[in-house]
Image (tube, rainbow, N blue to C red; front, side, top):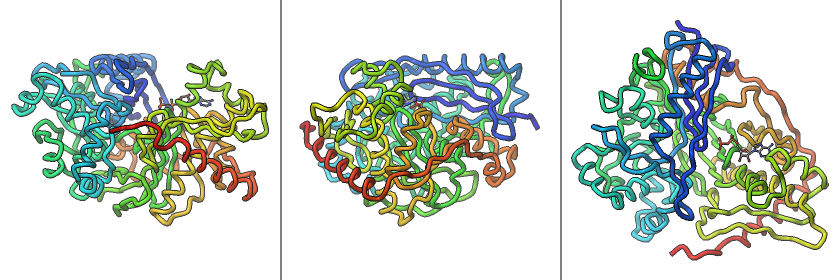
Length: 505
Ligand code: ADP
């Protein structure tokens, strides 16, 4: 068998291609950003054609630099920004509209109408999701209703939908000449159109959204011994590689962090934060404001589910300090500035820039900085920003404990913000549990590689993957219980000050 596994990570801000060896070590990578198109306040789009071009370049450059070719890869996995919606013509390969990104809030009226018309409970029960702008169903509906000719083309079977995993895979397998139109359970589950129990598109949900079934991809396992398709001689790989793994990015990170047992959780700190707790083959329906979602489905084995706490703004609050306030010149400086003070000086910052996601799901919230006095400085604000990342994660951790009855013993972390040592120390202090970061920080790309490699026997089983996981650093709690609980009580009070701020009807 070939020595390596390839992994495409089609993310929100960039696309990367990585190659891993049997030990889960990185052998090569290349990464390119794509444009964030923001035509109006609250609208966020990507150009799907640019994403496909970036994907082909990162593959070609990484292979060339590593002096590897298609025959060196035993399989290929794909992971992707979830929910971001592409609708394209299967005969021409041309998108009908830019991809509507997960952060885009243009479908707020569609989402509130779902609740008003009494569909909220059906969607929560069947799909495991609260009606929200975040998910793909409303975005597909918006394109069907607002872009000329799409509904007719969809009825005729010419206009097809996919998240960016499907878009990339369809193009890799031939595009208009035989492209394979599939997705996996984790991506399909983020549309509000898939039934968590049957793992298939649901007619009642399709009817609520008025979406023709024929435009949707076929739903496959996340790791598939029977390849979804193969890359082509005349494509970016210059040869045939079986494509055998697909996972949405947060589920991929869960696999990359080897959270294979019920009760194991990971928290990824990027633009936003996403904590996933493995709940095994049981579907746990949240009462505390979390999402219920497939974590992965490997081949014929039963689907493994997770509870998920999605937080919209964490690392992007640090970007806001840099780009909008200009009080730091780079993200890393948030650490040195915050270190100038011992504590937050009474300041709490709730970065509810686009409302609050889990566990609150309040689109009427907006950001607030509270507790200011004449004494406070930029350093307190920097510290309050790092604390906001940690307190939001505590909100989600509390919800997980409520829903699952499982108390966290250690939190496995990854993502860009985990480079911030102070932030990770505060996280441990705020939660009162150790925080642990692995050696391989690219858990998302690694998880997709694992899914692809398991399918072809490159890795025999998940025990072998566990052996690849090594800790690089651990932070232990240093606050006493009084400080922890007083701080958290003040945070909760600060959150109440952000609610009911804008009128969403
Ligand atoms: P994504 O995959 O969502 O693009 P990444 O995992 O690449 O995110 O992380 C990028 C985020 O991490 C940015 O929002 C940035 O502000 C934040 N970040 C990066 N380095 C640091 C740091 N040292 N301290 C705090 N935040 C950081």
